[in-house]
Length: 187
Image (cartoon, rainbow, N blue to C red; front, top):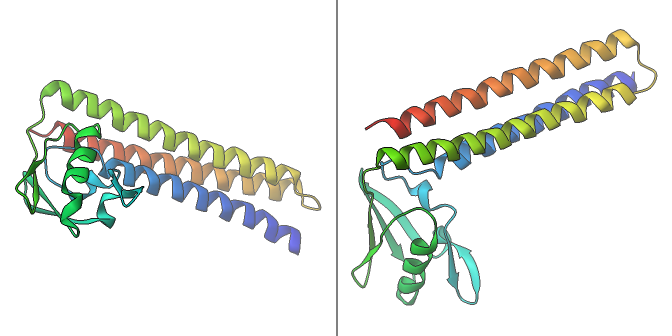
């Protein structure tokens, strides 16, 4: 009976890997600027603080008080310049304004050209996620084929199950892409 569980383990492992790929692409999509202020925009910004690079949200509180404005309040005022520099050097295309206590970042409206560039970025993230899902499928199927003391019918059934998981997860990625694309192209 332990060999049958190993088949279900292979399927379960594939599902977990595919779920991770979909979650990762959704997190990456959150960092793509759309024209609306969202604190997730700054998730990948790293600040040179205390001798090492730290995520922005570990040295300051980030808020979106208005749809077109982000505010950053550093917990240590000496980091204002470092935070400003980190935002300027990130490829987000944002211009921070520092008043000595708080950094304000107005979110400019996106040009048509910039929207198209962002859509390309979204498609690149999506393709990386699709590759991860396909890799999980290939890995699981090869492990299923190597499983011993299991009938060919059981192996075929497990492979079909993995293929269905693969197809379902690709649909989730495509749905996320469509939603993000619509959000970016919305004027």
